[in-house]
Amino acid sequence: YSLAMSSKYTSHPTYVKNTYSHLISDDENKAAATNYAKGQYIQASLGTYRHVTRIEVKCGASPVFGYPSYAKCQVQYLDATSGQWVTLRDFTSTAMPKDYITAIPLGASTNAIRLYNAATTYIVAGTLRVFG
Image (cartoon, rainbow, N blue to C red):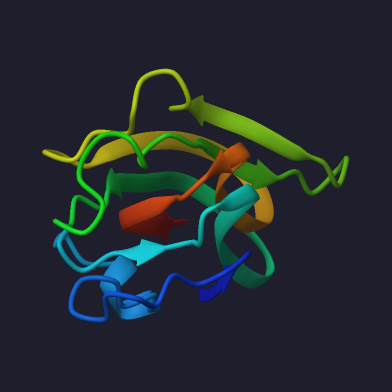
């Protein structure tokens, strides 16, 4: 996939890489992060509609951001039929785990997966992988 972000946090390049290669790894200390603003997202754009079977996510727990304050977001996919974002898992009240990868089954056709938060916050991700 290609990586799309609402904004890119760049103040700590040692930990925050904002790259595809870091998001498909297991190393939460090499994260992708947005700036502090309303309606932030980190998105995997697949280029074309594909049947996605599973998504894997893990919080980015770099020392820059701490944990769990910036691991709160929704995991969403763009529905091929309706064209609407559909929430698969809601981590806005309970933060996304940093100690293990969460596998989320999908079984639908989509061209984009995103981590999204409508509130004013950062989003920090250590892993975002798409399978299908």
